Length: 81
Image (cartoon, rainbow, N blue to C red):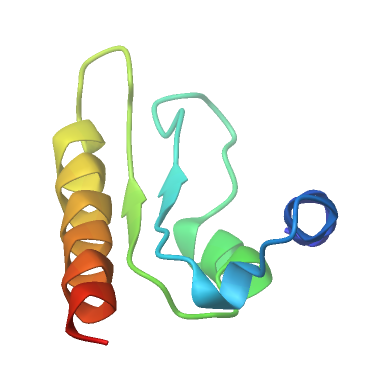
């Protein structure tokens, strides 16, 4: 997340002002970290987060739907300004 913040800052963006979600992928792999641990370490902004298995599609649509909703909400907010 620190690297993401740095890369966005280099492009003139601040992660705290962008709509985003977190997807914990590859949940079907052996010996994965618990989602609670990932959430504690990565989701400090308490954004919507989802478990997923991309090869089966599990959680993928839910992730897409959530980020689309956040983007549309932000667009509406921007239009109202």
